Image (cartoon, rainbow, N blue to C red):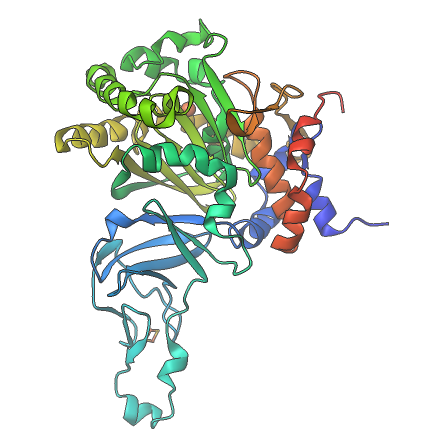
Length: 453
Ligand code: FES
Ligand SMILES: [Fe+2]
C-alpha cells in the first residue's frame, strides 16, 4: 500500500524520537507545499501600526510568495491587497512605503483607490464601450488582517483561528513586552538582504537555540562585550535556573535568559539599558508580581510561527521571507519601548544594525551556519538522513507558573521540537480542522518523547 502524501509529509518529523529529515531545508517540492500549507494558512507579520499612522500610508511586503500592499484607510482600519494589477497582473506599487490616495499601474495606467476600488481606466468608454464592470475588478483583498498591540498580521486562510487564538498561551509572554512594558514601536523601514538559507533555519535558530551562542558567537562575545560575554568560547554554561525554554500549541516558542535585559548590545549600551530596564521592572513588579515581571528584565529570543522572530532586550525584530528553498529575504527592524527617550531609541536602532543588521557582527556569524545547514540538505544521501533535536527530550513539563510546555534547563531543544511538531501537523493536513485534530494532544506528543524511539 502506498502512503498518502499527507502521511509522507508527517514522516518528515518524528516528534517521539526528536528528529527531523534533513530534506526539510532544501527541497523544491516541499517548498511549494509549504507556500500553500504553511504560508497559505498561518498568520504572517506585515507591519507595525506605527509605520502607517495616517490615512493613505502604505507599505509593501510579502506573504509567502505573494506580494501585498498594506494600506491605512480613511476610517483608520487597515486593508491588505495583492500588489497585482487586475489587468495584466504586473506589480502595481513599486515602492516600499509612502502615502498615496491610490495606485496607478505602470503598464496601461489603470488606477485604484487606497480602498482597492478600480477607479480609472484610460479611454474606458472608447475601448471598452461601457462594457467593463469596474466593480468586479477591484484589487484582490487578503482575507484576514488583525492587529495585536500594534503588530499587524495577515492570514490568507478564512478558516484559520483568530490571531489571538493562534497566539494562544504564547500571548502571555508576548503581552509582557508588547503591552505591559507600555508598548513597543518598530523603527523602520526594515533593512533587507538575502541569505542563501531555507526560511526555517533562522526561524528554528531564534525559536530556541541558546546552545550555539557561546560557540558560534565567540568573536562577537569577545569583541562586543555584551552581558553574554562570560559564555564566549564555550568556557561556561548558564548556571542551573538561569533560564527557560517554552513551546506552545501552534509552534511559537522562546528561550529566556533571566535578568539579561541588555542582551547582545555592546559595552557602550549596557549601563544605560540595564538602568532603564531595572527602573521599569520596579514598577512592573508591583503590577505583575516578581515571577512575571522578571521576564521583562530578562532576554527573550523567540519565533512566532512560522517566520517572525525577535530578541527582546537586544531590540531585534525579524521576518524571514521565503523566496526559494535556499533563498530567504531577511527584514530587520529595531524594536524600542514607546516611552523610551528619543536619544535611547536612536542608540538602540544603531546598535541593532551593528549586531543583527545586514552587516551585523552577530548576524554574519549566524549566516554562515544557516547557509551551510541549508546547502548540505541538498545532498542526495544527506537529505535522507535525520537531524538530532534530542537535547532535553523526555524532560519537558508543564509548570504552574509558565503557560505552554517548559524545558528542564536554559539550554535545550524544547522549543525547537515544539516548532517542528506543529510544522508536521500543518504540512500533513488538508485543512485547519484537520490541523486542530492532530494538534489536540500536542503536550502528550512532546512529553512522550524518548531518544531511543
Ligand atoms: S497591467 Fe495594469 S493597467 Fe494593464
Ligand atoms: Fe546566533
